[in-house]
Length: 181
Image 1 (tube, rainbow, N blue to C red):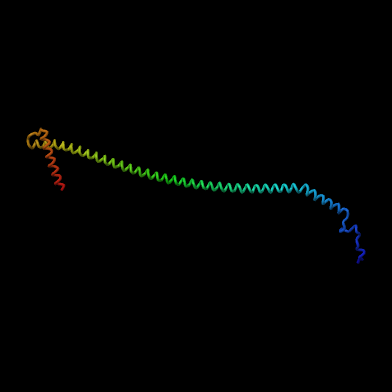
Image 2 (tube, rainbow, N blue to C red):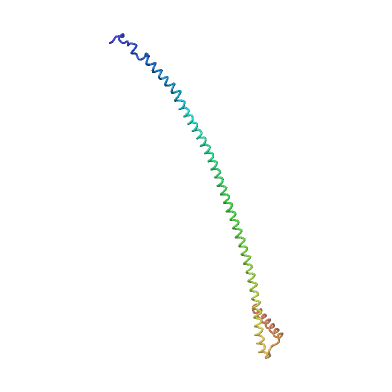
């Protein structure tokens, strides 16, 4: 084994003891940290801060746009609901107007039908009276001719003809009334 004295290492080769290059390296490192801290890190920090501010502003704008969109959507839904109510009201008004028009037209049709029926009754009554007068005239002429043949003398007198015809028709009416009973 080696003796303890042989194990002693000279000071110049011991890595735990600082030497001149160590101080130079330490000075270079400190200079590098100072230069980085003075010229490189502040612009990076400023860029990061600006980027964070931009992101915050974008989030604020996004929240504002979202609230605007929600209010616009609520307004749109309200307008659609109003439009639907208005359309329903218009449809109801149209139904009521249609029902009123139909009712009015029915009433006019019934009035017109009643007028036509009344006119028809009047026309029928006038035609009946004309027919009765014509028949009375023809029956009178036939009755006068027949009575003249039976009696053997001509009934030329108007008043006499009229009396004979009226009597004949009265007898005819009396016989038809008693026959109908």
